[in-house]
Every structure is written in structure tokens, then in C-alpha cells.
Length: 207
Image (tube, rainbow, N blue to C red; front, top):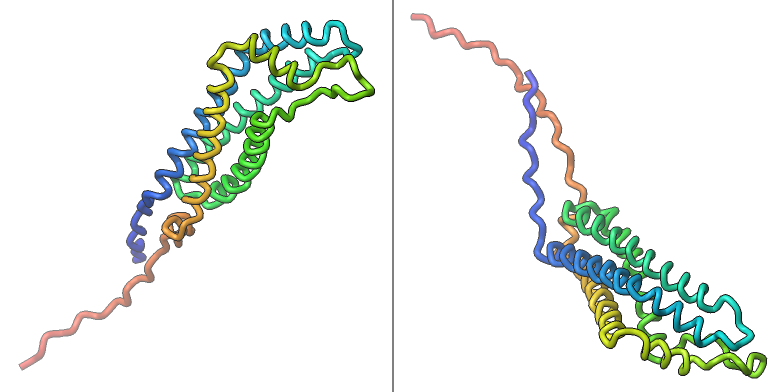
């Protein structure tokens, strides 16, 4: 008769992995909230661009700007959903999920960092060159948007972006620590022990 081998002990999740999972949830929340806030100002943004470019040679600037904002918000939602799924799988010790987290977070960190830098230096410019002298400068556009948007909009979006970026960077570092390696290492599957050899009974000694 074959006997089942003793099942392997369930893997205990290290604290660094638990913290990394919660940071992924935090990054997801930041992305979704940022998208919601962005969607709430699409109408205002379009109105401002319509007014700013009303007497210029540029056409379709308002539609293009709104489309870019909407697409960015949708991408943020998709990334947020991805962070939630990865947090669940990382919490279960799935090593492919950890690898995907590194790749996805690396892409998001690059884009978020560039976006925050562009916002800080006012890099969004529609031209204003000599070829389009009637096009307003980036400063004029930003000033018009700042006057139309609620006072809390830009600080909130920037804060959410910084929180998400910091959470992603920390999660990536925690998942790469040596303390997390064993948790993501594949455990050997339970096998079957060979049957014990049958030993014939020993007859009692005779007088």
C-alpha cells in the first residue's frame, strides 16, 4: 500500500511582501482617484482651450487636449486595476506576478516621473514659435487653465501622482529584497512515499 507524503508546510508571507502588496493597493487608489479628478475637469478644460484658441489659426486644439486628458485618465485606471491584480498574486507568492510588477511599475515610474517633471517646468507647449505667431504661449494657456480649474485641482493631482510614484518605487524595492526570495520560490509538489516492504511474521520459538 502506498502512503501519501506529508504535505509541505504553507509558505509564510514575509512582512516585506505584505507591505509591498499594500503599497500596490495604495498606488492603485492614487491612480483611480487621479483619473476621477481628471474626468471631472474635462468640460472646463475644453471650454478654456476653446476660448484661448478661438482667434488663432490653430484648429482642433480643444478636442485634442480633451482627448489626451481622457486617454491619460483611462490609462491610469487600467494601471490601477493592474496593480490590484498584481498585489493579489504577489500576496500568493506567484513569481511571474513579481516579474510583471517590476516591468509594469518600471514603465509607470518612467512615465509618472516625466509627467511630474513636465508639470513642474510647464513643458506642455502648443508652439508659440515664429511660424505661428498668433498661437498663445504655454504660460498663457497654463494661466487660463489655472484660473478656470478649482484651486484644489492641480495640487491634488500632483499629490496623488507623487504618492503613487513613491508607493511603486518602494514596492519594487521591497519585492527585490532577499527576504522575499524564498516566498516566491516554487515549492516541490507533494509526492508519494514508496510502500514499506512486507516482512513475514516470525514464528515463535519452539521448545
